[in-house]
Image 1 (cartoon, rainbow, N blue to C red):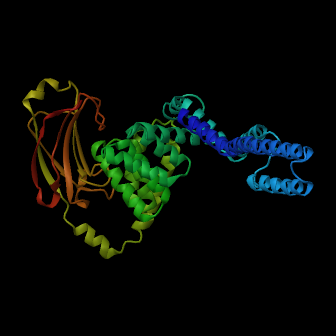
Image 2: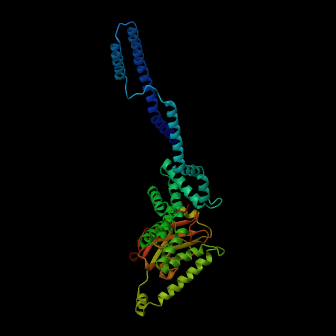
Image 3: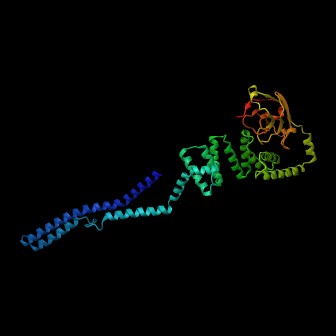
Length: 424
């Protein structure tokens, strides 16, 4: 800001100098010319006096006197500069001051009419209120940001990024604010910047997925589904990702996956939640769509489905010796299979409250939680065994867990799974 005003002052001084200097230079030239011409006139008058004296004393005749006078005047006229005036008309200093004042006043009027002083004031206010906007937007303190405040918040974030360089949190906030302002290009560029800095930022992957869903085309929805799969791979119980995945499945008319996701959301909610009834209605609608779809299956297709061989995997569960001391007193053992990529809902689950290690369980299509989402419906799977302290399938701190790598379901009939991890 100081540099900008200093530049304004310097440019103004240069403009004033440009206007005033010609007047001041002209005045100096006129003064020099006046002094030189005065000397010539003094010599002329002196010579004229001498000629008059010679005539009076009759040293020259009248005709010679007249001829000398004419010659003297011609010489004076030839020696004077005809383009320069003998007298300065007006005070050039006043002209210079008047021109400079006019220039300054005209500049101020022009800047007031067309300048960016209002934008500068808004920018300054945005920078001063940036912490407050951040608290109201992120921490949900106070009133929600208005449209104008969102624009000021975006301006402040862009200035901060320009001054401080790459800031992952600032880029993420800018992307979310841009989404609220319907500036989708800015939001996408901001989220891309965050993912270049940190490809594993799950919060940005979820926000980016929301942006892709707003665009609504098939390419964007596929990209959103891939991002949500990355989130659910690291956080299988992330409700935001599950809800978005449910919306994608619903829009694609993938009723089985949509129902599985909505049921998981419903199980995580209290019945007093304002969204509970809405999701329950959505599940009922999906059930109707599934029933309508099943009535359209031909007897040949039903016979083929019935004759298809189901998958069956024998899983031997073992516990790492160093974790024996961490076993909960009344823990619940969950053994389940999930798709390596795709819905977060388990394909097959076995729940045990009485167990000792080693033990063996069978996972098959009979252990499916949702109709149509079965072990045989996916080729690449991941097996997991988790000892829960609260009888919930959702992971929490202090629980024990073991996971397999990605397995080819058609090539796996037996597998030994070691519980060797303490969830932090």
